[in-house]
Length: 397
Image (cartoon, rainbow, N blue to C red):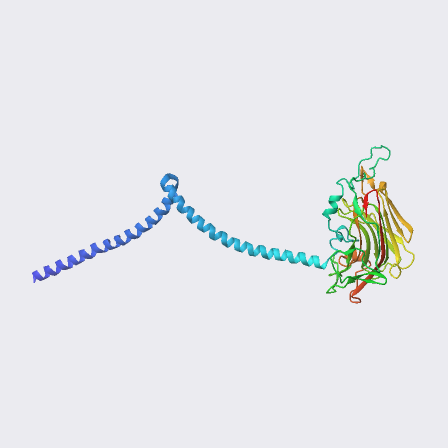
């Protein structure tokens, strides 16, 4: 019995000791493995960072590893960013282009009303060939050395003359070499009265009120033609026989326009039946509301033909209506501080019909805006036109 008890006690004691010894061994082994892995991982990362600055060999290897990782990350990031940026840029560009295209399509005269909210004239794109023909000193005023006038002297004669054609065009027969600026053919026709210029209604008529001025305007403007001769002239005379458009807001323009912005005008305003307006601009510093004039015309400007003449010389501009001089502007009267603010550059004669309804200030000046609910086409007529070039400044053909 004692032997049995001793045996059982020994067995229990041995089992207990085994239990106590095994558990720490297993836990220690597991813990050591886990800890060893964690330290190994940390050490690996730490080694990459630390040895890069302490061991040239390890640094080289580590740098290569980091470089490879950076390259991969950069490539992925750049690809993603580029894709996102391209999409955004395309969207922005499309929006901007659409806005620009809309602006261009809805406002042909916007480019010409930049000078003023109270007047507008179509402008001609620069002609590089003509610019080459014109001496670089053309149109520049030189200081007066006589000591008698105290102002700038007249423009010196160019050594390279402007190509100009003396020509009379009968618009009851054909265009005589003149062209519509934008290539449109639906904006005019040859009739027994002459060249009929047609101002067409916009696709939508939306009258508006300008919140800042309280003045009416149209959201969209009508489309009209602008006609140009084949070449320029620098000083000379032109005469046009014209019947103006009758509707308030419609403007029949007869102008000389240079590539640098110099301009000499007649503007015939609808709903102002017995007046013609004149103006001029010095392209280097155009001013508004300073150089204009309003002149009486005997008889209706839109039910009768009248003859409008501009005689432009280096010394003065004469505006003549039906053979009667209505205004003169002397070059010397434009001079101050040695600079004469006077048109001198080679210019095209332009005749056009345009809608002044797009800007509230311009619409008020033009007695508009046009009420497009009452009409779809507004007309004015050019019967004939004569150009006479100044031989001192032009090579005449």
